[in-house]
Amino acid sequence: MNPPSRFSPSPAAAPISHARRRSLVREFAIAAAVLASLSTQAAPPPGQLLASQCFQCHGTNGRAVGGFESINGKSADDMYKKLLEMSTRRPEGIMDVQARAYTPIQLKLIATYLASLPAQAATSVQR
Ligand code: HEC
Image 1 (cartoon, rainbow, N blue to C red):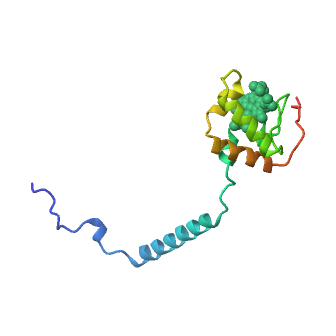
Image 2 (spheres, rainbow, N blue to C red):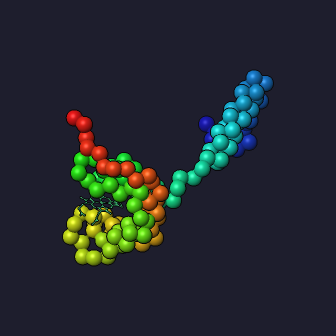
Image 3 (cartoon, protein in one colour):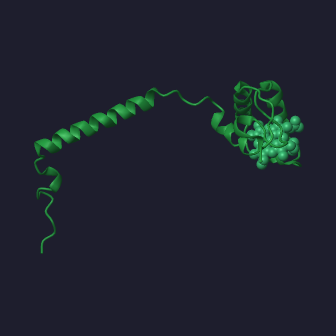
């Protein structure tokens, strides 16, 4: 048997029915509309993604639950200084290890984002 010729008509080259073409046009229009709406969505604030990691321990959006320290709505400068110090000193506590995972620029983004969140008192878990 001969291998398939490069010039044999492929199924993709088969004529497309009118109904199929209309459906393809409609699908393309939907895809274009979805893409257009995605591109107009606001980008998340810088630092949000980096800071989301902190919320595992310090509570959702930095509002602490059950004895942790809240980290939302504090001074960005103070937070940045603390984080920078933690990241550069000899690691002893859990936060030193956390802070070391970021560059100073990332720590600044985190501190700025956390400062933009409303300050809320820590809460305790209702059981
Ligand atoms: C694995 C849990 C955990 C994660 C994740 C975590 N922390 Fe902490 N953090 C702690 C604990 C425990 C303390 C209190 C004890 C200490 O300071 O080591 C603390 C304390 C702090 C303090 C107070 C330190 C002081 O001396 O005033 C700040 C500020 C802080 N964390 C910010 C952050 C930020 C910002 C992030 C994210 C980059 C983060 N934490 C991620 C556990 C965590």
